[in-house]
Length: 88
Image 1 (cartoon, helix red, strand yellow):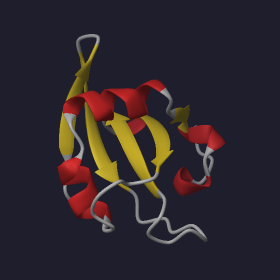
Image 2 (cartoon, rainbow, N blue to C red; image 1 turned 135 degrees about the horizontal axis):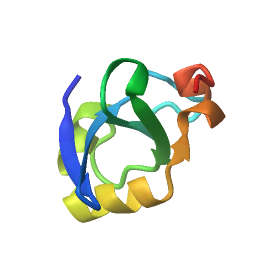
Image 3 (tube, rainbow, N blue to C red; image 1 turned 45 degrees about the vertical axis):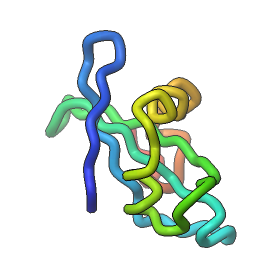
Image 4 (cartoon, rainbow, N blue to C red; image 1 turned 135 degrees about the vertical axis):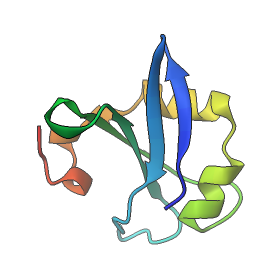
């Protein structure tokens, strides 16, 4: 899976598309924002409707840093999302 990184208030977050598929198939994707590793890892999830490419990998590549920051701003903690198994 392709990975991008963004800096949010001095913290680096890795951004990857999830493999989770919804009933909307290629009309809605989920991005996973990850900070840290191991037990200290923090994850956030955001869904969005792509305007261009209809594949997760190409869609991630098309997003600007500003769009990734917008997605991060409206992301949810991992424990609220089926994509992460509702884990804390």
